[in-house]
Each structure stands twice: as C-alpha cells, then as structure tokens.
Length: 535
Picture 1 (cartoon, one colour):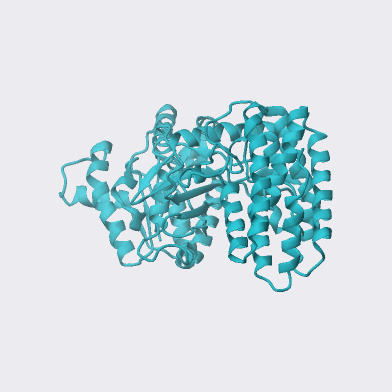
Picture 2 (cartoon, rainbow, N blue to C red):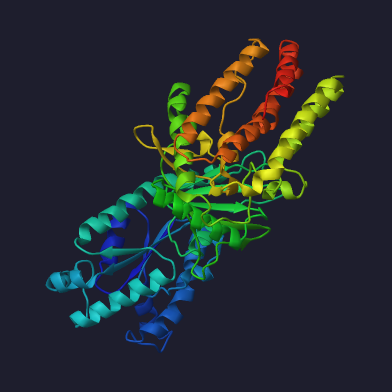
C-alpha cells in the first residue's frame, strides 16, 4: 500500500505521516526533502518559492517512485504539497488500487479560531527555516486545495473543529486497511456465470470508474455477481456501503431510460420509501464505457431485504407491500407515463419481450399448451386456448381505456427493503420498471396454487385456496385504490391470465405434469381453470 498525503501548508501533513510511520511501520518519503536535495545539489535551478513549477518538476519523479514501490510490492508513505489535482490521470488502475490518497485542508472558521495554535505547532515535527504565512494567505491556500481536489473528484479531509479527531480517524482507517488489503481482491472474483474469456475490473479500475462519477474512496468493496452469461453480465460492486457501481452489457438501459427511472425513484421517495437513485457524472451522463461493457453508479441503501426473513415474517410483510402498491397507484394514477412498458404488460410489449414479438404471458402460455400436446392432452390444450383467446379479446377491447401508472414493477420480497422492525422501508432494482395498467399490476401480485406443496392435495383444494387468495387480494387492493366498474371487471380478466400463464404458475404446472405423483392433479386443475367464469 502507498499512502499519498497532500494538502496546504500548516495542515499537519508531516505530523500525520510521522504518526502513520510509527503505527504502520511503513517507510516515509517527504517530497519537501526530495525538493531540497535536488535544489541544493544543483540538479535544478528552481527555488523553494517556485511552487507551481516545482509541482510540474517533482511530481513525475514522485509518480515513478510510487509506481516502483507498487511494482515491488512495497509499502510507502509519501507526503508533500507537490501533488497535482489530476494525479490519478497519470496512474492507471493497476497502480491506483494500491494507493490511499489523503488531502488535508482547514476551513476558514478553523483558521480564524486557531491561527495562534497553527503558528505555534508549525515546527512540531520539523523546524521551519522560514515561516511568515499570514492568516489570509493560509485561508487562500487551504481553499485552493479543498476546491481543486474536490472538483477533481477526490475526498478531502476537512479540519473544522479538531485536528486530532480527524487524523485519528484517518489513522484508524488506514491501520485497518493495511491489515486486510492483501486479501480484499479475492472478494472481487466473479461467479461461475461470468464468461471465462472476459476480464473483470480489478480494484484500481473500479476506483478509477468511481472517480469518473466525481467520487473518491473505495475502502470497502464487495462484489455481487448476478450475471446470467455472456449476453447478460451484471457485476455489482458495493462500495463503502454507500454506492453500487454496476458493470453490465444491458442495451435496454439508455440515458433516456435512466432519466425516466430517476424521476420514478423521486416519486417513490416522495411517497416515503427509500430507493437508490442513479448518479450522473459531472457532464450529466449516467453511463461510462469500460472495454466491451458499460458502467453506471447508483446509491446504496444499507438495509436488509424481505426475502431474508422467516416464512412467517414474510407472510406478515407481504400485505404491507400490496397496500403500498395500491396507495402508490391511487396517488400517481396517470402521472408522468413513459413509453417503456412494465414487465407484466399485455399487448404493448415490455423491453425484454420486443425481440420475441410476444408478451411474456403469451410465451408462457404457449409453453404450457405445447407441453400438454406432447403428452397427448390436445383436447385440454384446445379448451385452455379457447378460454385464453376469449379473455384476451375482452382485454384487448378495453385496455387502452384503463388507468395506468409507472411502477417499480417487480415488487417481490428480494427487492423490498425492511427496517429494524421488519416493516417495509423501500425498494431496489428498478430495471423492470415501466407503465402498466393498474389493475393488471394488482392481478399479478396475487397468490398461486400452493406451489410449495408438492404432495397431492386435490385439484379442487388448490383452486379453492387460489380463489380465496384472489378474493382477499381484490378486497385489499380495491379497498385502497378507487377502481371504476370497468377496472374491476378487467382485474378479473387479468387475474385469469396471471393464473393460467404467470411464470411461477406455468413452471409449477409443467413440473407437476412431469411428476407421476402430481400429473393427474395438475391435469384436473388445468381443466378447472379452463372453466372458470370470466364475465
């Protein structure tokens, strides 16, 4: 690890470097000593007063010393004021990952309140031969450092009240980092679905990408790899429990899409839920290229997820989620609708369905009827298809008249944040968000056919349990959301489509059809579904 300490004069850089030397036992290079050695030896005609020229002269030398230390896997503390604001631009990711940068700067109020002490302690570590800095000069120099490095995307350690507490925190953090840094990169290895012929970003490249969004840091980085193969790469780096930096190849995520989502996230925040917004860079762009991938940055909300609860606790949480969806629809009905459709949309296709040319429910239903035909159950497949066509035609005739809302659209418990009392606190993962017919969204949040029960319980029992669940769902949602008579009828139709062609249901039906134990029960259940009234 190389610790690079800079800042204005009198900010205690040398004292901090000395303390780190004593704590960490790292060797220490003073850029001031290097400067005076070069000047006194006649290697340069520059004088100690030539600050800007000295930075241009000294930094390339210091930079190469830092690179050499990292290449040789040696620890080093480098301290001095001759560090350019753009220092990262001259060190690529493989070096940056081993550098910890610290800039100290005092606020004007601190200088006003402690100027006498600052002068008194100016020679605590090294005797200053010349020290006639005025209060105003000191303010100007500290302001220049703080503003310059902040604009460059660096984190500045501001001394506002107490120098000791600021430097003690830095020392503690670096001491902890020094103990763990050698094993940290092991946690950044992608999972089995990440392509073997691709290289994931290393720590330095992650930090460089983060700096591109104007944010310095990265003391703690954790990878969550949700990739599904070469065509769907999703590397999610949780940084300091404040940010999520995602590297991906999702073509459906565009600058326009990110702006849409941030507006939606803003509404959810106004609604009282904690939701992570996307962070643009200084030019207002959300995406930055990285080899064949792109990366973008979002806030990180450090709360547990609903799917981490026990089954009993999840059952208690789910009604809160349903009520939240209904209240949100009531408040934001027909507000700021967007062209991107939600994942449950029929007829108007969601982004992932456009390439196929069919909505997901149609695809699921065709998979089910194809399975029935393979088993010789053609008559049952035809009865289901007839019912399916009738219900779709009813919906097609009215769906454009039905109120809509832009939803997060994937409100399963793995996307629901919970507070310390295990109540709903927020939502994550807005990638499937879009405009949806409100009652279709409601219908897709219903239950199923006891999919977790893999022993026979009777087709009639499964259907009865499903219908009871749907009745409770409808009462709960429509007790909050004020639906029209047409919406109430349409919700029943959408409910039939969800029951017969929802992804979890179809997966259960097919698995049951392939099971000797459940095959007869599932065939009977599908026959009952085909006869459900949908007036």
